[in-house]
Amino acid sequence: MSFFSTRRQGGPGLFLGSMTLLTAILIILPILVVIPASFTAGETFQFPPREWSLRWYENFFTSRMWLSSLLQSLQIASFTAVLATVLGVSAAIGLTRISRKTGAVLRLFFSLPLTVPSVVVGIAIYAVFLRWHLAGTLSGLVLAHTALAIPFVITTVAASLTGYDNALDLASSSLGAGSITTLFRIKIPLLAPGVISGFLFAFVSSFDEFVVALFLQTPKLRTLPVQMYNSIALDMDPTISAASSVIVVATTIIFLFVSLRAGNKF
Image 1 (cartoon, rainbow, N blue to C red):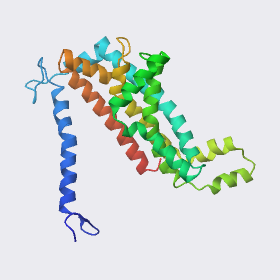
Image 2 (image 1 turned 120 degrees about the horizontal axis):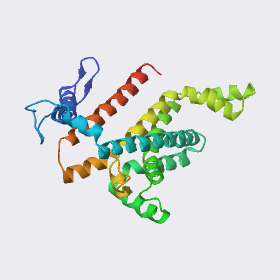
Image 3 (image 1 turned 180 degrees about the horizontal axis):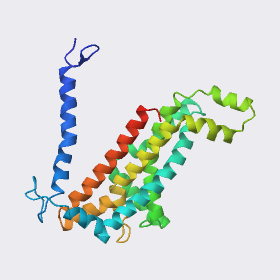
Image 4 (image 1 turned 30 degrees about the vertical axis):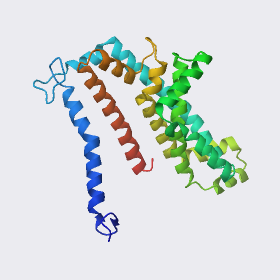
């Protein structure tokens, strides 16, 4: 049995187990620093905090600047998730109805936002949106985030489509149901796990997105990640830790919801 391989009966090998543990530590360790630091009563970052306080959370939820950024992020992420889900589900279903060769090319095209560096995407979107007068607008940021979120929806819905029996469409048609009725009463309900997962992934990807939002920001249109970046450059007070903790907790709750619902098969 190889040192690097996975044992069928004895579980993962020592190397794989160690790498999994190391990866988990690297992911969790920053969270274990940021969240306690957000409860400090001091004027600067302290870890571990000498005194505990909720003052920075109070500052976060009472500051017009921070609260405006949070609400704008939630608004943009909500619009993005709805639009990306509609377009992504349509694209995923459409990809199953064309030839393999054409479908492979289109899948590669749809995955480009995930493979091209974020800075390159941001510069390209900013240059195009300047000509279209969409830079610095809510609709422009929603459209940009939608383009970045669609691959997540296509991936999750495509995974659900692999277990979908196309004979159900034929059976529905033979019973007199039209294509729209079949789509909304048979196909979409059966694809619900992938659709809901794609919606939540699109929401989270938009809510956490920074680079494109940085290019398209204005003094009146500033998402929470951009506000955190600007605050780091100017203030560096522990409010940033409180904002980071809010994002971490919210994102964790969403992904736990997806995992639990997926385990229960929705």
